[in-house]
Length: 197
Image 1 (cartoon, rainbow, N blue to C red):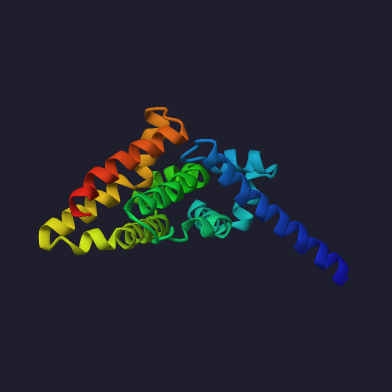
Image 2: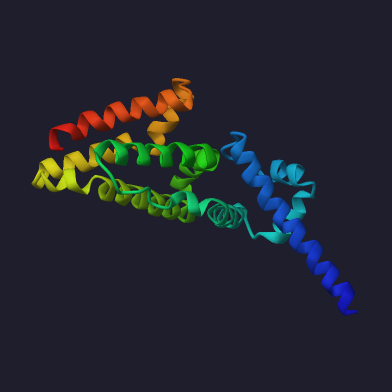
């Protein structure tokens, strides 16, 4: 009896994981708001099965976000703050380009869902705050040389210039390959930072 129960549990867990993986795959392929039927078809299960595992699409999105974080959390580790200004700029750019390549499909979906999903909005906000704090730490010596409103504006400009949204604009909208996108970001960051270096 316990063997049958264990087998059913294992099948249920596999089916649930397949649904989450299907949603993440659809995000990666550019589907910003896939419906339950689309997720079910990709997972190879019935639409009813999707809602057997999750109360609603919000619950599925929450599970997908958790799974995505488990997969890519190491890519959010802060870049090295060692070295001169150029070394720190390059380290930050490499981190952002690598992160963009790994998560942009899910990030686009998160941005589209955020206005109607408190869970997604909260997660997106916390990730952006983390990345913003990394920029401030990366260029702390230069920021310390400014005061008040000028410092706030410089910090904001640096955060924008190193944002995943800017990386996505360069890579997707302008069609720049990785090296050219990185060179463009470096030019922007250096132009902002040199006067304070």
